[in-house]
Length: 93
Picture: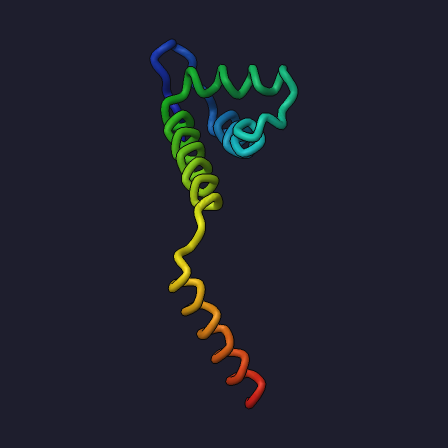
């Protein structure tokens, strides 16, 4: 993937690979200020990486929202029954 931007800078594939490896840490605010600045600059100049960043951010938000929801009681009961059935089958094997 060769990235091209609108500002005249052309990030290399290595630049993109490095940024994409750090995206998760960037999203979780686990980078120092210099690394955050470098990642942000790259995202400002590289549309393909920005798209990947936006996708990662969206997935993270959906997962976080899903983790705070409670499954309906009937679904939880069906899962319990299925788990018991699987345990019985494994035990009988």
